[in-house]
Length: 62
Image (cartoon, rainbow, N blue to C red; front, side):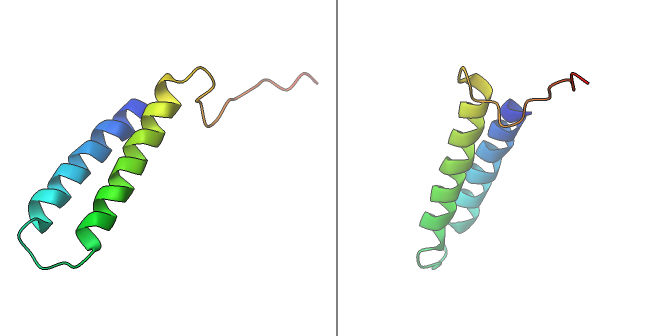
């Protein structure tokens, strides 16, 4: 799921940059890029870091 999140985050980032590149958006383009990079980075960390999983299901020992 994290890899898919990174791929979709990349697609959203590219789509947003293409749509907003020639429009007077003020700082919204830079905000879009910052959030996109953060989403992609977090997902790649969750996918490939040794302890990067954000959720681990463990059995209940009861």
